[in-house]
Each structure stands twice: as C-alpha cells, then as structure tokens.
Image (tube, rainbow, N blue to C red; front, side, top):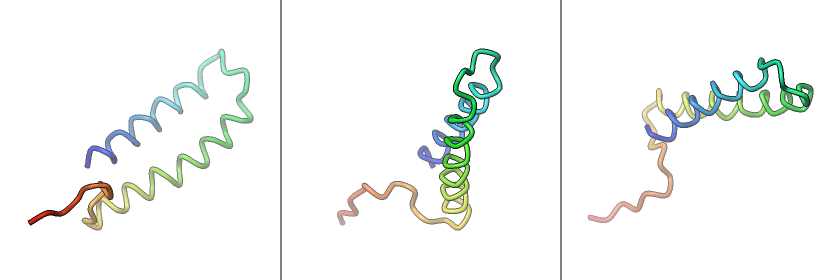
Length: 61
C-alpha cells in the first residue's frame, strides 16, 4: 500500500510541476505525465484488486 500512496503523491507533484509557470519543458513533461498515468492506474488497480503491491517481499514461514 505504501507503493500506491507514494506513486499517487509523485503523480500529484508531477501535475504541480507541469502546471507551474516555470515549466520550460512542458511538452516533454506531458509525455512523462502520460507514462505516469499508466503507472499510477496500474498501482491503484493492483491495490483495489487486493494484490500485494510489494513484490520484493519474501514470504518466509
């Protein structure tokens, strides 16, 4: 779940950076925005379905 929250926060900060008046590379940032949209939607979909978002966790019993 932490990965999902982190990716949503990164997405929000990216939106703030794109809409700021000092975004000189706005065209490139919109391409980056499209990529992060897919990334965030994938993480949210995985969290809603109930899959484990932390794929690096070892399951030791």
